[in-house]
Image 1 (cartoon, rainbow, N blue to C red):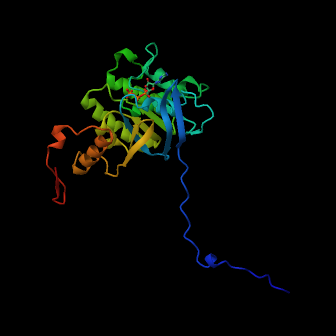
Image 2: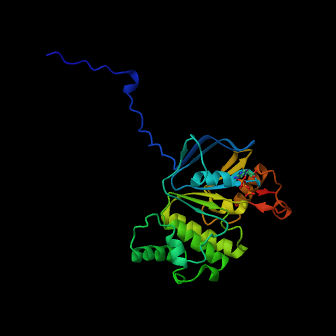
Image 3: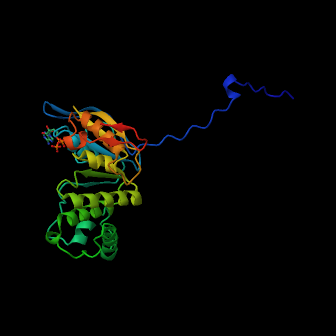
Length: 275
Ligand SMILES: Nc1ncnc2c1ncn2[C@@H]1O[C@H](COP(=O)(O)OP(=O)(O)OP(=O)(O)O)[C@@H](O)[C@H]1O
């Protein structure tokens, strides 16, 4: 019997290491355009966000941050352009947007997609989400009795109860006082660790972006003009490495660092010093 001849190509003799499986992005836009009349706000933007990645978006006022966020939330038409996002998305805006005539738990229940749940099950899920944001004791409160921070916590619970693959945060802490904002940062990071959605946080606050995100993007003229990967371990102290990233991002935004930061002599742990 004639044995079949096995022909080997030269490169078959050395097996290549198996390539790591490519991660399918949670969010993908390629050459995305959004135009209002003659105003081309988003102009050929490329964006990819990995599942579970926390991305912050900075940009001057009017640079198109909210327009981009609304696109990813599915709130704006995209025509025949390809916009890849997870099927379940949730948005938290600067104002909590609670319905004043519904109790807190019912506001949270609005986030649930499936209206077919029995009332008891809906309340139980709303309660679990409210407990996660530290409001397990305010289920039956009216929104008008909540503080600003509590209202935003409720809005976060309403978003989380959906178990979103993508959480979109449009300056959610901007209206809060500094101390409440810091507490909200901790809360958001804890919730992100627990649920691991991809996050896109729109903010004007460079420090907030560096404190929270895996990657900070700068939007300018309708495109991603710069990006910084933040590999600092969390929780992030405003140390020399933080300040260096801050200076670079402010530079990308065309802003000079304020004197209080710029003037300080910052020592690296190695003893190296930067002005
Ligand atoms: N529905 C709309 N119709 C017409 N123009 C719009 C509409 N929405 C946004 N724009 C315009 O698009 C541009 C970008 O607006 P957008 O709100 O996305 O900016 P932004 O970066 O979020 O600004 P800010 O930081 O001030 O919130 C602005 O010039 C705005 O006037």
